[in-house]
Length: 404
Image 1 (tube, rainbow, N blue to C red):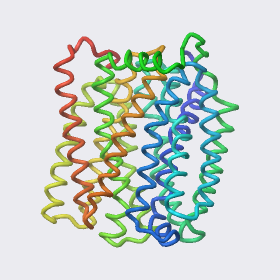
Image 2: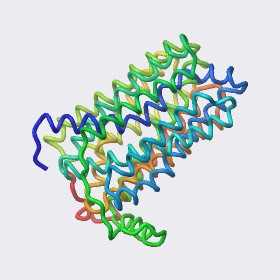
Image 3: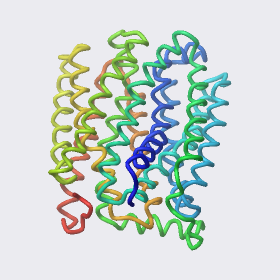
Image 4: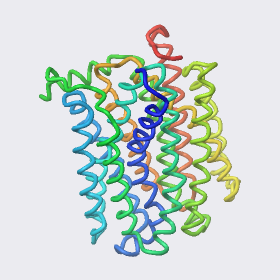
């Protein structure tokens, strides 16, 4: 699609903000775990279940929005999800007990995932298969505002005004993103009246997507590799604030600093794509991710790492993930045009479903050390590399498209 530079930047900015809505909703309240636990009379581990319920909500919700995006176009389902998000966020501010907050976070996630699925599908609609890897890298630049700004701001908000104000800030942010979407983002895919919303045709459509070997391989690589990030997000409040005893504000700055690796390398990925294919980049990056995660796990079990070395190991891991993520996303969606909404939904649902399991695993196996978090990072990284190697050999290389 031919467009001016100004239009290109506008679209990328809004799509990036839509993609960042769910991460902002995750990252901003992380420094408030201890305060929420004290306020609602529960434990930090139980508060972490509200994060897990958010991941589950996003995973299930994306399967709902995928067919709707293909049937009604991109914007109508997107508007519905944004309204649901705004209502749930407003009610979150009023939560009086932990069970209620866990349920509300699930509903909030169902609303926010409309933004995630629609944004990914619209990237494919507006920019095509070859350009999408570069656009995904640019989206991560906008998305980078979440881990760099949200936890730091959240730490100061909790310290000054309490955890409920975090949801007020999210409400305002969601309203602003909604307005930008309404006025500045075009409809990128016309409604398809031939697309049935009956259960059986929807199931057939999802199955047709899953018959594409390239999608299945890179969907699993994307989800498994990214699960390490979910483990890190879920485990970092415990690791940094309870194990290493940093305060809320310092935790926010550490989290923001580590995000520089993930975001910075994703931008360098755009430059590498001028000389190398996405397939070449992802193989090298994922191999590095596996090596660093195994070294990290061995050192964690042996008790080698203090605060400084833990930060360094996470920095290198996230740097590798910054290459893996945009290329896996682009390669998984490359074969599709008509079913991009459903493919995007399956991609996001798998990512969030595996991420939710990783998040729950960190909470369930919590033992007062960093080892459970690091173990999940290592296991998911190894599995991702295994899927990439085996999948590429089983499915003939000629079946993989859009790799440049």
